[in-house]
Length: 324
Image 1 (cartoon, helix red, strand yellow):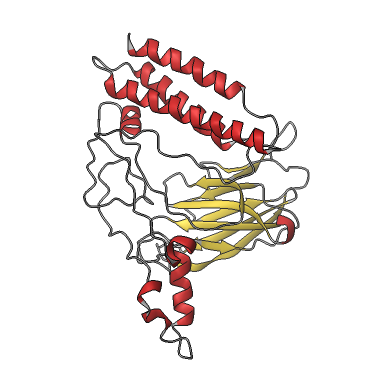
Image 2 (cartoon, rainbow, N blue to C red; image 1 turned 135 degrees about the vertical axis):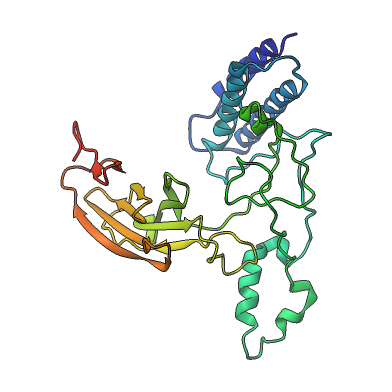
């Protein structure tokens, strides 16, 4: 059977599973929880079958075929992350015997319970002069060393990604969507932030910013950012070269629902329903600040929609029926 026909069959099966998604925010009983768990398992199996079709496809590559595959994979992943009160999680579905999933053996110790970064931070605290100064010498508390840095093996590798030295990457330059599917193997390292609202990457990819809700009952605005091209500033609790995560308290009266970045001026813009504030993360000559500095505060009056920086260095904000 032609690969396109197989994909059509799998698309129908995937749509049937998605149509049976729960309408509320998570299961309300043990039985419904088990049904939802089984439904997500079946979705993962369909996505794995889609990847098998791509791997086994022969003959000339049809761009529309890979576009359809990419659409279905994204659709399945999005659905498993929606309608749940639990932390979104999906096991790898794109690996095969020839391209196995990259796993790190788990250890039943302190590190496996709290994670490397938390353990390193605690060791820094308890290793200060005093009655705890010898605690860090206990072998059972020492965290595993971080993975060594390695070159990014492909031009599409993101700046935040890290690769094991023995990873075998065989990209297919003729079709980037096929590369995404064929090389869908990774392990994610994360840091805790407040409840995210929106994320933005600058036009040149040098800054990643996120607006979040924090404080009591998540009523306060929080702005976090990473300067991705700053090799001199790394995460303080790790030996990796991940750019440092920085925090800003914009001091709004409400949550900051919108964000924009002016890369050439090194400015972060955040907005609540009434005001827009800007923060500079560094000097224009290339030197970055340890903490972003406040620059502007603007009253947006009745304009409370998204904000954007235009090419002529003007900042606009959407309102009802017009922009300002």
